[in-house]
Structures are given as structure tokens and as C-alpha cells.
Length: 102
Image (tube, rainbow, N blue to C red; front, side, top):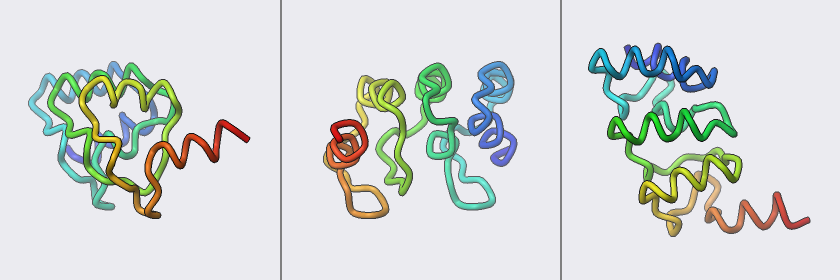
């Protein structure tokens, strides 16, 4: 179920995601690569982020990848900590500055 949930999140498929979550899938379960659905969700999918968060996904788990601003905003509204560096040691502000303030 963890891989199915991660695939639905990565594809940005809120309908499949909702089916799995309503069927008691764990939103914090790691897939076969050790990543949670919120870490692999399709970048730029705030609906997917919000759905995972409403079902208890942990927004503060460190992740080496970066997301788009709407997705990060959804995570921040849910209480994601902005003072945790990612896998490369960069804070969300560092990533945003590098990516969007060129």
C-alpha cells in the first residue's frame, strides 16, 4: 500500500490518493525507496499536499528534493518547519532564493 500511495502522490492523482487514504493507508509510510508520499508528491500539487496533510502526513520530515511555491505554502500552513535543512543542507529559503530570485 505504501508504494501505491507514493505512486498516486507522485502522479498528482488526488482521486486515487483519497481512495487509498480513506481505506486507512498510512500517509507517513515509506515506499520501497524509503520516501513518504509527501516527499514524492508531484511538485506543484497543493491539492495533493493538502489531502495528505489532512490525513496526518508529517510535513517536517527532511527531504532532499524541493517543491514549488504553492506546495510549500500548503506545507507551511500545515505547520511544516522552515528551519530544517534538506538533504543538501539548504533551508527552504535558500532554495527559494536560488530558484525564484535569479
